[in-house]
Amino acid sequence: MNYYFTTIKSSFKLALVSFSANKLRTSLAVLGVTIGISSIIVVFSAGEGIKGIVLNQVESFGSDTIQVEIKVPTSKKGMASEAQSAAALLQGAQVTTLSLDDLEDVKKLPNILDGYGVFMGQETVSYHNEIYNTYTWSTNSSFINIDSTELAYGRFFTKAENNSLATVAILGSKIKEKLFGDNDPIGKTIRVHDVRFKVIGVMEERGALMSFDFDDFIYVPIKTMHKKILGIDFLHNIIVKLEDTSLIEESLEEIRITLRANHDISPPEEDFEGWMDTGKDDFRVMAMTEILEMFDTMSAVLTWLILVIVAISLVVGGISVMNVMYVIVNERTSEIGLRKAVGANYKDIMFQFLTESILVTFAGGIVGSILGSIISLIIAIGANSSGIDWNFVLPLKSFLIAGLFSLVFGILFGTTPAKKAAQMNPIQALIHED
Image (cartoon, rainbow, N blue to C red):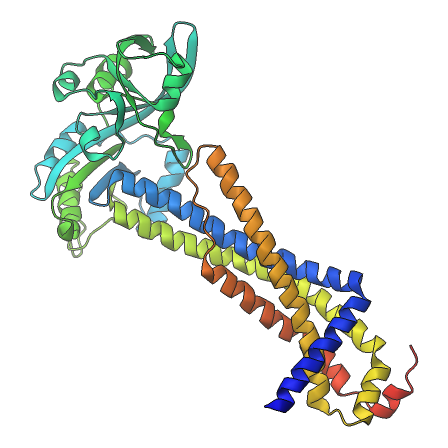
């Protein structure tokens, strides 16, 4: 035990002497590892930040809710169907079969407490000389009872106002500031697509979900929007609240069955049970917990894919470490011969140069971890200053993986130069001239 301790101690001292004698060369070797390690920290931290945003938004809708959204029917199944549907929607395809009647039928199911429909559009809104293009969130009165968004002041519209096509509106916090500044908007009249709406409330600040800033929305009765502005009668989404979350799978299937019956979608010729989607459906039914699980899977795959790319950059850094170690071995050939002449064996020389290689990558790991943490903090500060609710998190696993990569790459790229040193003939090494 004392022998190994002495060996480690002497190897460590020799490594520090070697590095201090060649500061620039050592710094360049450390730099390559630093870049790769800092990337690992940033990737994991950013992943946690994005996950926090999605989790907050899922919680804002409620973990006890189910979402129904439009989907383009396709000839394919599974993920191929999802990809084909997404591509069609991006190209401007419209699905007009999801309706308020569907919402009412779904609300009649045994485990459904309540629900609301959504049509999201973009309209011009104005107040006096202030004119903006903003999003409209057309819904029914149940929205405020299910969604976690709260009113800052004023009130939400009622079921009677929705049914009577009342022209009332609730403003998101940002659109309120744009139109009215510090003035109270309650009771004031704004124009949405040239239709006069009376402001009856202002929402609490909510933040953004991906590309949608809910604080820049105007909330209006859906029947008013359908009849007085758009001249349509379909929805983009339906959100329903569950009474018992333990029956979520049964509720999902009951909703699918109800909507297929409403939309005249026949079951497949094969087994009907568990038919989630064969491509024929013009809707998608998902629990909010499923959306989070799907994001977790996608996030994990993306994270590890990026880590593969980071590993490639670490290989480049590792090659620079190996080159530096080769130079060190050549410069210290006489020293190696002398050590062998006085009794140093293969293992002693091998251990000496592996220690130096690991120290280089370990130093890169420490500097990279610090740099990655600083960059992650800057990203979080920048995101929060832009109104994105970004949590600054530095997962322990990112540092563990960074440490593991430093160790593995130090051994991997230090082994060959160390072998070259350990296999030298002591006599030839002693007479070697630089």
